Length: 117
Image (cartoon, rainbow, N blue to C red; front, side, top):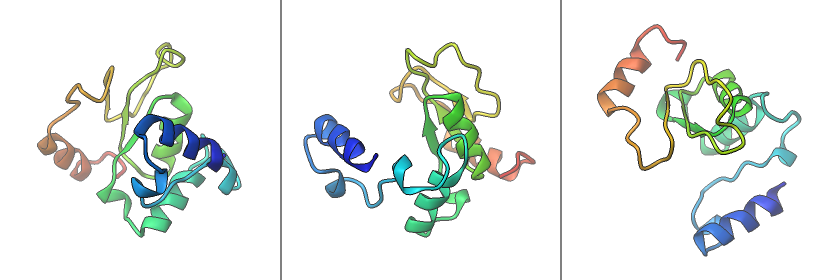
């Protein structure tokens, strides 16, 4: 829910979520939860952003499936709860966001390749 997301972001960043992010998508504001693409479509619509200008970051197979269904290339950082899952179709799977997943050249090539984006 939005209040839970806001509390989590406040605890993690020490600032109100609205001062950090332009749009926050939470499962209680869309008709269907992940793996449906509704939350990604909502955020893309709110930001007025095309999918080709975005990359999703997910930590689960449901999240990956949701992002891919919305047409987004997806970087996966599995958690302790999801590291046993497989992530077919992910742009890359890395242990954390400090690990460079791929170069910007690779992303550009991937977007122009026949990969569905």
